[in-house]
Image (cartoon, rainbow, N blue to C red):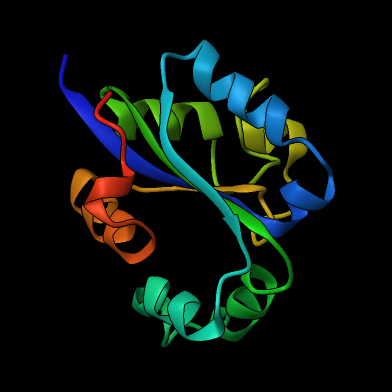
Length: 141
C-alpha cells in the first residue's frame, strides 16, 4: 500500500454542527491520521484560488460565499492510500446518494453543503495542501 498525504476540509456547516470530533473519529477509525490541522476562516481570495477550476460554473459564487461564511478546519490526512480512503469515508458528493455511515450521509445537508471536502487525486492533494500549509507544518507520519 502506498503511504500518502491528502487534503480535507470540515466545511462551515460541519463546524456549526459541532461535529469535528465525530468526523475526525471517522477518519481515524479508517486508518487516517491528522498530519496537520488548523481552524480558520478562509479569506475570499484564497477560496477563489482553491476553487479556481469551478470559476466558470454557475455555482461558483454561492460556493465561495458558503465556504467563507464561517470557520472551517483544514487538515492534512496521512495513511495508506489516503486519497482513496478519504473519498470512501466521506461518501458521495450528494449526501442522499452517499453510502450509509459515511460522513456526508450522516451529516451532509445538500450537494453544496455536504460537510466535508477531500482531494480527488494525489495531484489535487499536493496543490490543495500547498494552498493551506507550508511543508514544515505537515508532520511526518
